[in-house]
Length: 247
Image (tube, rainbow, N blue to C red):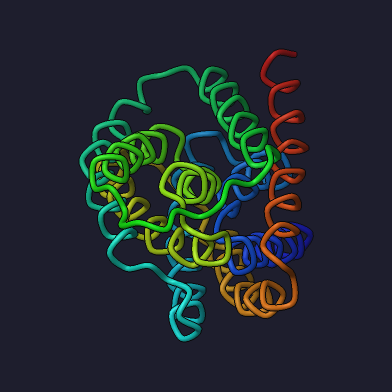
């Protein structure tokens, strides 16, 4: 019963992050699965991809209705990241678990610090396919390697590299997360990783429901507030995981 309650609570938080921030779900789901529910890093990253994929689809529907998804940019990002996500996902299974945890923490820290920098003005011209494609490929590799949806990197990349306004970056990142997560899951399908569905199923259900509340929360906060909140959550999680990896 305790595991069920923890799964429901953690899932709700993950859903709020994805629905409200357009990312951060997997960067929260992975440590929750490891430290609260006893999953190994390999199990946690695989389960996280599944949870985040289903939750992102739910949140994407709501943001699409509000016109907050830049489809051309999002699809370009996602297409560029499919192959890197699959290759990195296959390679991740051969690395030490401590190395994966430390890399996860470092990447989250870099993303958070970037988002705390003064915001740039959104680009007024057309999106440059080269820049969007390169950023998407890098994001796909990180998604497959660390077992994350990539939203915690997609949002700052869309804002800082491509110039998408924060609120639209939140919605567009959900499209990128969905495609990248599916590609990474495909690469891990034959690894034989066992998942405890008695935990994963309620975790996912709570996350899907939480995504709708997160969507409503995002409508009440301005883009800068969302960006700072996102960054501080990432820093806290990254610090905890880095300490654990080095202990």
